[in-house]
Length: 405
Image (cartoon, rainbow, N blue to C red):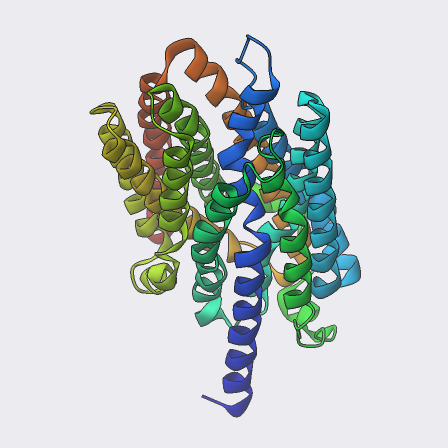
């Protein structure tokens, strides 16, 4: 290995660690929004609670709507400047959500979570930034490093909720959303240490060829299968997770039980990230995605077996593990499907489709839960995972045909 390659590896690790640290802090806004969004929605609504999860949908819509602008801002300002802009947006969303709770305005609260989601779109770009600044053999590990920052998020976000939920009593939940402002400030400070290598000269463009049209890239079988599995696993995770706090409180469990359940879930989402990248490097992304889909099925089976606290928490843990394997695997598949000159538009398109689907899933979660209950939420896992397996199988067959040709 040359000295240049060794130095590139060190720079890639440093970049991934800074992004992971910032993900750990600013990323805590997401579990705050998700764990409290539905319950705060119930608190603000009248007798009809069917739209209780609409604020969480607002959060996911914000991530979807922010995907393309975030990619453009990061491309125009550079990654450090673009990411720090995202922290300002997140802080603004926390401020709006807090004000909405003081004014008792449901729709203003939903808008506040939408703005937090737009800030979250910048955080979602962290994983791509880590991969883009890493040598090929370190890309999957770099993605895993960044997502491993979610382990701190899993503890920090829910603990903030528990200790601040009633801090502005009698206005419930306002303290939790006000806490997003200092989180955004700390995240910005961490990002200020981000040092990225200078942009490579036009020689890269010659090597990689001209950027292909977006349609050509997104219709390639590998990208289609990766996007399908990413959407399927993430939408399922959002669909079940969004309804879980409502179901737990509806079954007589406490709000703290529900919050801790989300904490265990988020921990399971990110804890395997320390080794998921190595598993992808050794066994291939497609196999890891398949393992993740099997874990999602296990989540549904446990959830359907009963309504005890351990069953809720175990199903949420399996849901998080399944998401980690399937989503990181799918992201690694996407990361090798485009050239450096194409990354901005491909990443923006990917996250727009992904979080648009996740937004629909979170909205449907509340509606399905209110109409048919927790059981139906979990039955929906089976057809979606089957379709994801079909997408992986189709990709495999396409590869076999090319090998035989």
